[in-house]
Image (cartoon, rainbow, N blue to C red):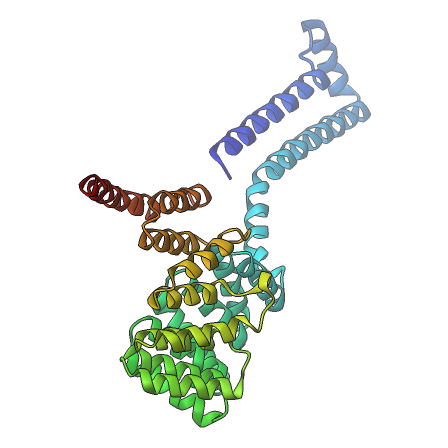
Length: 360
């Protein structure tokens, strides 16, 4: 309760006291001198009057006292009742309801709220590995990698080594730069299910992180053999080909991925990968056309405008490169990357102007 509420209850109590005192004065007014003598005579020589008067006064006093006590208890009891209801609040939902609310918050991007709700669910049902896994995911998305690993390890243990839990745990280890624990989770997952595609994909990522690109490609291809629909694995293959200096292979893999989707539903990451491959093959014009079309989509990301401006810059289209940056800055005003790239454009424009003046 706030200090203002306590002050209010004190005022109410004082007001109630004054009300009772006023009532007593009305019901028992001070007698005059003559009334006081008559009263003494009557009170002394009339037993019935004396007893009745005593009962009447006692009844009024008791009633007034109980009224005052009830008001004071009601006012002061508000805080105790409020504290009781607050302490009881965590139990108004079942663990499943807490978990469902947490999942809704997580899907809507409210990570702090999701963490709190999943924590409530885990407190009431600590042996539910799915709740623990969701809590770990919320922590990981929030950037709390150490706690996310702890919670996902608990989830993996409670699930009796479920391959999905092991792979997620391994990915968290890899994101934290802990290669050996990540690799250990791959081995455990494949021991549990040797055909589990996400485990082979994680195996490829661990190999790629060490620069073993050929091994990574083999693992990624094996993962696609078990689950051809894994888009993220296909993108890993494109990126691995680019790291190997094989832009033609990267272009082919990107086009293969894009062909599986309608034009308006093609993954933007695959479009960017294709654009990079085209630039590496010195096909800058087609790359610009591809990225320009992608920038017209409603959900175009900031990366599209960055890649488009760089492609225009490579083609010496400085005004168009600046226009792409301006569009990106308009759509994403809080990102500093566009201002940085604009500052880099100025020297390039000066060099072009100087070159043109020399050629004249």
